[in-house]
Image 1 (cartoon, one colour):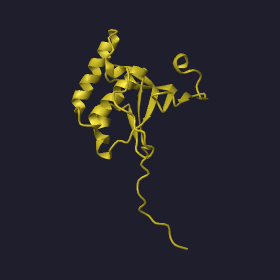
Image 2 (image 1 turned 135 degrees about the vertical axis):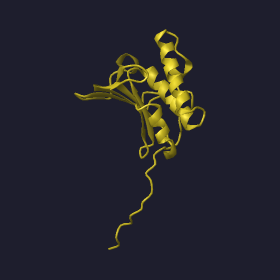
Image 3 (image 1 turned 30 degrees about the horizontal axis):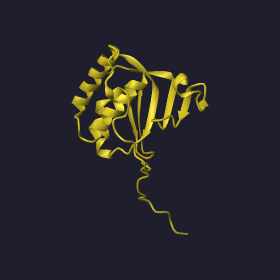
Image 4 (image 1 turned 90 degrees about the horizontal axis):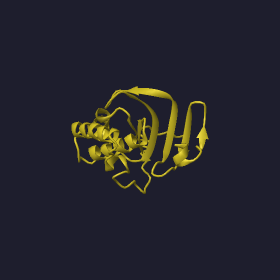
Length: 153
């Protein structure tokens, strides 16, 4: 990441962070690796974040697709955490396909595995090379609605 994006904007004992390193809103490398078995055993340590408003009715489908696709509704962000930037790109492209009803969860999982196999054979598909959708130009945060009004003094 340092070779590609330069020195990180933040560095702690547990992580390195780059902000606005196109196309990413944020890139984080964690010292603590998270074991992950899909599509094959590896560890997740690289998280990459984009602005994206995920409809709440799609959260369950994304969780079934890949537990390392992370949605933060209030912030209006979606991220992927894996061991390679190309795998994060793939996960977010397939997540977008699920959200926009272009793929089922099962089809997306199959496509993910097939793309990773091709990548391992030095034949990366276009879903691993760049985002296949336009990032939103508007604010994607969803602060929700107030349901408890403050008492009048």
